[in-house]
Image 1 (tube, rainbow, N blue to C red):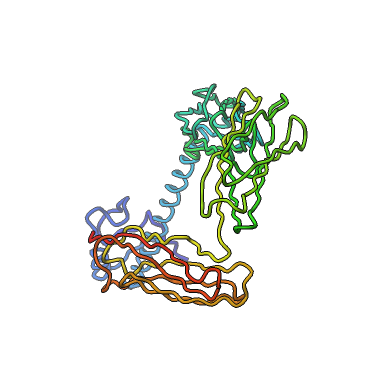
Image 2 (cartoon, helix red, strand yellow):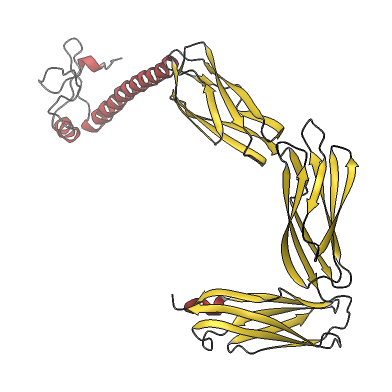
Length: 394
């Protein structure tokens, strides 16, 4: 058997070349030479002549094999180098990334430590910290040595906070695998004196019947709370204070006067307390007294419309007959270009009207007029709903 070894290959009378093909020999040039010259393998004093095609296949396979080996060795070296960089650099580990402080009374200061470990082989630098206000960093190591750990202390002042707090903290690190670490600092802040379910009344009622609403006053302070005075106007509603638990919980009831002024109104109720932090409580009183037959809203505000968007405007008007079951009505208007379409509800006590505008008939400038509601109710045969707005070119 004749063994072909790369070191024993040459072309014609040329001496062997370390680069296999030689610097001046291209693939095409080599093929041309192979076709014209025999491939000689010395063995003792004999020479074997192989066909050009077979020789070319052998050389090509040999070249690809050597190239693949070189590439594999290079890739392995690069991977090892890359792994070396990671192993030699810092590695940040944060055992805790979320902190929930639960429920706090406004005015309290809450602090918490986040732990940062360095499991790498180089110092870990905390380059910068960003956070949601009013969070503050009070202690922080600039650098954590390999195999060590550091604590970052955050504090939250809750005096100006109310409700849910979602704090976000971003640590900027020199860790190639973790450039930014995200932490959360969350909880719920309640006032020293809480008005539940909200610090506002919204009470509506029909003339002759009135309406009621209630707000609880809850003391979150350690000292007992005493309600000293409740002040407000009395032409639209009255109030009554109940003690649910002395010094801790009270209920403020609002009763809408059934014979009071019609329409919507916004008033303010002032409650004087014994609390040093909150000696006065402000409660909004939004009331609405309506007739048995009424509309919602009481007036139609179109706002300012651009001339090229007039046709896109659309509003809804509701007409109610409290306690009715065979309510009949007809709508009309004195505003040119204003269109009305209405349909009765399934219970027979209300109608829904759709208001649209005809761009070709609407004039530029102020819109002022009315929608007339003619009904079959003998006590309220006609309702007048004011309409206003403005159409501008741009």
